[in-house]
Length: 368
Image 1 (cartoon, rainbow, N blue to C red):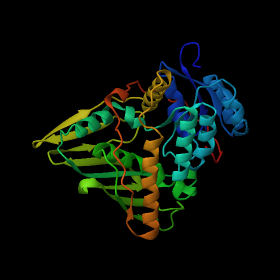
Image 2: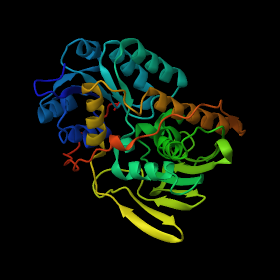
Image 3: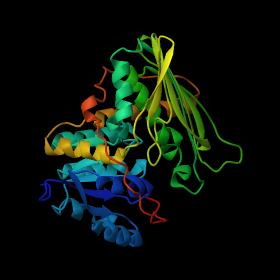
Image 4: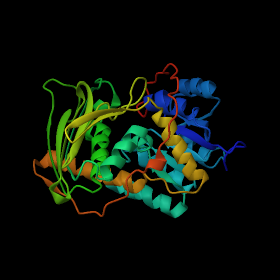
């Protein structure tokens, strides 16, 4: 049951950068969510974060104890991608709701296991596609799906950053590399804008000579959708930070940058060109993590199914696995046709001011 003020009680699983720098500060911006517990493998971090937020700290070995404690209603899972299943399935089986960082998993089988666990218990599973609650993103999706830009035909995107060699993302192969880490952003965006699923995947990748990332550090992906719609995007762990996408339809185009990021000074903005005239659309800086948490808590409190559910997460993972096969074999990969899935809706929009982010408490834990 929620706390005495009717707020959903969350435990944070893993105290790494996204938890400390985004989720934990963001929860305090909402009026329907509160943190009550933390799970971490670092005792010093457990002590410091527990004091900062007034939490009860648990080690990973005590996770089942937490799930049975009655102290929480939901968990926010932000472990490395390849560890998601081991924390999500037990929570769902215990009737604890789960807000899970993307990508949902690194294997389709893990996605299915989580979906089935949620179906068995009735606990809610939401994948943390924060942009599904962000005002500017929702406005673009709504306008494209309403046909303002005609039939959407071509999508292109670039998303790059420099990842330090000692970061776990650079040292755990494809499962932690740029395609799984950054690929869900352009992939999910084009699926939302086109309103359909890709049928064929091609990819090419490179490894920087002398580089320390132990997988392809730069990858270009090509997707073919129904009705011969095309998408292309490039991802990198070794190039200066850049994020943008362009969608061209039969009546006009959208160009967005920034479009995937979050935090101080990051406002999701876009330029819409119709009838030869370009108009700039700028939205306020909002707290994406407060927004997605408030939305998920609303779903819990009102017993509604969250929109970016396990099926949404799996649909991205199945494409990412096809990208890996295309990279490995050098051959295009066909995908089984899937019926369209509902896109993010305007009523998911949440707008909270950006939380102040406290100093980061460092750790050497490989799981955070």
